[in-house]
Length: 310
Image (cartoon, rainbow, N blue to C red):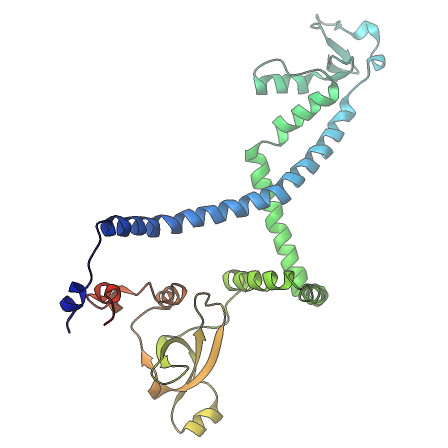
């Protein structure tokens, strides 16, 4: 029975072209969309739990520092308010110890240079209900703009990651980390989530010590069932001697998450070298065999798969 006879037995419905077009559109749209969603989720998490608290702490420190510049009304003599020995001082201004001040609505005074900076920054008269509120706005405008905060935060964040990595690489840090993971592994529900997330992060960020040389097909777990495997080496000498021929050590990854698998030693003569790359092999495994490399596709394969079995 040829392919035309198989495909002739299936009747296509009127909505099949529409359904295939929708699925094809989803297949194109979902990968970039999910990638953007994941990165946005990571950024929002970092922003909410790291950037925002650090920004709030920096704001408190800066405001406390600048509030030391505030002078109470009784600290400036009355004859120094609204009058400069050299020229007229505008209303609400004063001069004290060689510094110009501007009076807020609560009667206290802030430095005139800070007031002029904020006025130039926002383009109108700054809010002056209280000197404390003025310096909160002043700090936000002068030090907490996004083009200042984000680069500074990234530098601090990278430095924290560097120091954390150095600490965990040391003996004391490794000991505390092992104790922490031992505690996590004793928690019934959390340990399952933690182990799954750790597998993904280890695969993405850890330095890979396993180097795959090529992709082969082996009959595993029994004869007649073919499985993709990654060649990692020539295995052990004793096994080679027992087999009386060259052997290979291969890693058989599992679908759909090829972060774990099985290490198997197999005779070299029982392997088939495949004309695909390592990345194509991982795509094939993650997709459970749906994504087939173009050089390995069989003409008319889609028609065969969609045809009903007799």
